[in-house]
Length: 443
Image (cartoon, rainbow, N blue to C red; front, side, top):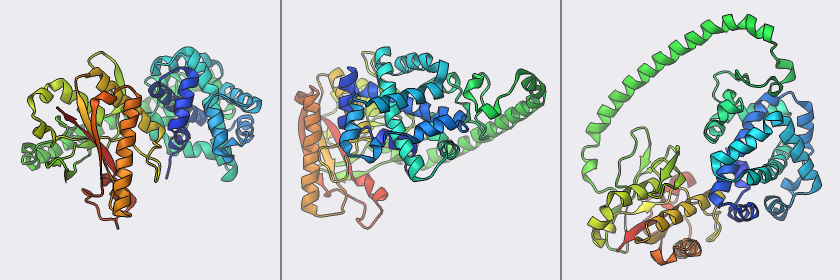
C-alpha cells in the first residue's frame, strides 16, 4: 500500500520537477529535497490539528484539480495557481503553522539549500498540491480530519525519516516517534495542540511529578533493551563473519563493505564484454545519507547506493590500478532509477535526483569514462524487451549528454532479458531485481 507521503511526491514527476525547478531558479535536487521535507512537515504537523473543524472544511473544499486532467496538475507545479487554490493554500499554511511560518520558511531553505525567496514561493504550490490530494482522499473515502490524522500516525516512521534535520523538535513533531498516539511534545506552543487538549500551567505542574517517575522507568526499559540488542548484534555478527569468509575472497563491484545492519543483494550475470560479473551490493535499508565529493559538494543519497560506491571507488585510486578487463567485472547498479510502466523516456521525480547525482560525480572526476547497461526481466516478448532496454540505455545516455557529461559516456547497451535470473511466473516485486540500469568505468 502506498504511503501518503509517497503519493504526494509521486505527483511530482520528472517533467513537473523540471518545470518547478525552472520556475524557482533552483536545481532539481534541491527542489525535490525541499518538497519531500515540506510534505513530511505538513503531514506531521496535522497530528496536532485533528479536532480543527475549520481546517477540515478547508481541506475538503479543495479546488478538485486532483480529479481533473494531468494538465491541471502540470499547471499547479509550474507555479500558476488559481486564486482559489492560492487562497486555500494560505488558509492551510496559517492554520497549521501559525506564528512558526517564518521559522519554517527560513529553516526549510537552510536545510535544503534553496533560497528563502524560493522557499516562500514553493510552500503555497506544494500546499495546493497537498490540498488537492488530501481533499480528494477525504471526500472519496469519507474521512474526517481525525480519521486522516490516524492514517498519518500509522505512517509516522516513513514521515519522520523524511523530515529535515532538527525539524522534529523545532516544529513539535515528537508524536511521530512517540510510543503513544497522543500528539503532544514538550516545548510546543499551545496553539499547535487541539483546543480540547490544551494543558494549563497549573495542570501541567500538578502532573509533572506523576510523569517524572514514568519517564525514569521508560528510560530504564530503553537501556535494558539497548543492552540486549547490542549483545544480540555481537552474537549475530560473530556468526555472520564465519559464514561470509568465503564470500569475501570473491570480487565485489562495490569496492567497499556494507554496513552489518543493511540488507544487500548481489546479482551474477555475464555480459557481451565477455566477462562474468558480480553486481554491486545495494543496501535495501534506504537510510538517507550525505555523500561528499572532493570539492565539498554534498549529494543526497542512500546508504550503500551507487553514489556512495562510485565515490569511494574513485577516491580509493583503484581505477588507475585496474585494467579494462578487470573493470568489465565491476559494475555499479543504479538503485533509485525507475521508469514509468512501459516507458522508455519517462522516469520518476526521485529518479531524476540520482541522475543529477551521477552527473555531479562525473563532473567532479572529469577524466573518467563510463559504459551504461540496461536490463529487463523475463516477462513479455524477448525482442520487445531487448528493444526497450536499448531505448532506456540510450535515454539515460541522452540525459547525461544533456547535462553536459556526454563526452564521458563511451557506450550504452541494452541487454534485454538475456541475463535475467528470476522466472517470469514470479511476482513483480521478485522480478524487479532483473530490471535495472548499471554502469561501469572504461579506459
